[in-house]
Image 1 (cartoon, rainbow, N blue to C red):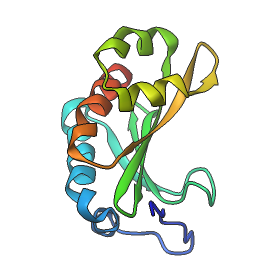
Image 2 (image 1 turned 90 degrees about the vertical axis):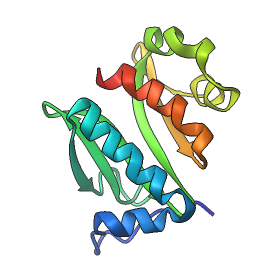
Image 3 (image 1 turned 180 degrees about the vertical axis):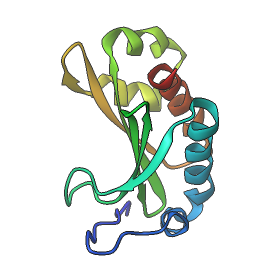
Length: 136
């Protein structure tokens, strides 16, 4: 469950990444399109952090990394970093599912990293809310 695309020797095409997400393929495509259209991010297919992470889409704005989106079998994971102030500004508006990711973030400086898994439509509003803080 939630297997990633780990074969570094074969760079996947975008449509293969969407298909890998199975029932979440449309959500994966929708989030990537939303990031490009809303924030003018540049999209690159990358194998950024080694075999544990696999292939993903890096979204950059003026060469600054906004997030990575990793396709998984039946889902996808968005990896992003926010400051503690940014997390606090939206915390009360988040669903319990998203709050758990914020509560268990990997600390880094005055903030931290989350790896937010999107498994269904209900998870989209909160990840978009968090990405808005990062990309705006």
